[in-house]
Length: 359
Image (cartoon, rainbow, N blue to C red; front, side, top):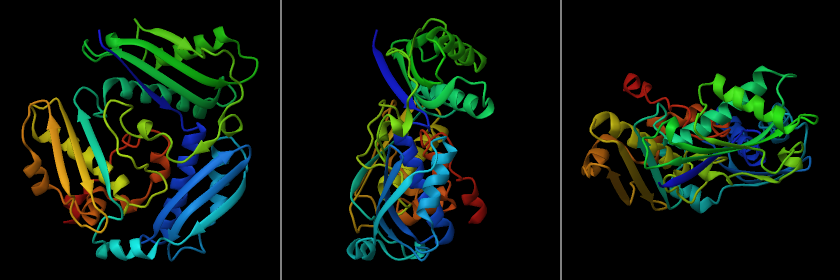
């Protein structure tokens, strides 16, 4: 028996709240000026939000950061916040090395390592246990949105799924499911546990042989940024592969697509998924890309798979791994980063199907 645990949090978690605020600000800049260079972090705590970072954009005066912060906060049920901003321009040295405008985007804006992974067995191509954790959170979020006044949940939620890796990865491999869910006052433990188990069963994500541990610390009625400080980029493992695979050191949210720690990570995942489609004998594929600031091409492309098939040359021939090439392939200037920031960034497909239509 080899036990492995993974986790996911809801979009109402304070760290995810901060991620969504950062990416909502990014979406606003890109919508008005696709050439915007944005790197914005947010911290939320006790009715306050601190937004800091660098922005260089023709839309600088048109984006109301405080309005965006409060739209996201109110949408998550946390009300209006007092907003403090500390925003400066992007370093001119970095801007000069990257290039101005997407057609002139010549190089990576920073060094870094990025990982991508995909495996068969789940529609999402994510590891089974992490896919299940995402589904559990999605079911709770859906219940909150579709059953106002009836659901016991207040929003802030975490789940942890433990599987036996020596078993085929399906519901029979699930050993333990931990769910900590912030709930309304007056809901006792038995009521909450019954509600959650029925919800999982209704969504066909109930593991019959698993041990369920619901709110192990007892009642939890105060959550969100009133209970904990939220910070952009603090859930990079939940953003990606739930601990099953390495992740690069850079967070995603609040960063425009010129930042390779975001864009190249997205691309590496797409490469891994495409490899499974092109090479049907593969069960899994792992990709590592690495970049140097001011350089156009990756300094390394490394591929691992269960068959040991050398496909690095296929990757380099098939994909344009320059910053501009990746942004174009993934259609990242379309925005939509706020929605992606609410959970695992690979829950939604990238709009790569239109690539052939445009060319």
